[in-house]
Length: 131
Image 1 (cartoon, rainbow, N blue to C red):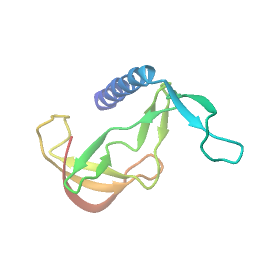
Image 2: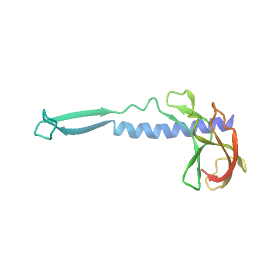
Image 3: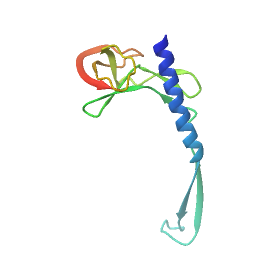
Image 4: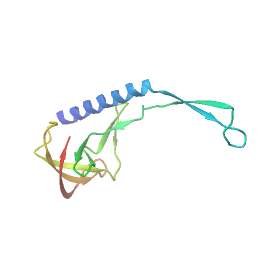
């Protein structure tokens, strides 16, 4: 239970950082010039794009030596507080040795799997990994 709480707190902090930065950059103005035939001309159109990150879902990962990531849990915590199952093709961590305690300067041996309906069955592969 403490593990899920810790993952949820990390995801929430990360989401807040994204949201705060998104708020600063929420209005991006792009200048476009066009004419009736599609070539560049003197008439200017200004478009404003607003980004909505409220449907964002984040999941924690461990890093591997081949510059890839492994999902720690096959579920993602979303901005609005709900939890979703992540994509079935995402590689994940079935277990770590030593047991994962979220220490930043610890190297782990991860047993790898692929997400399958919110779980991470092992494929028998072991790789070095870290936070």
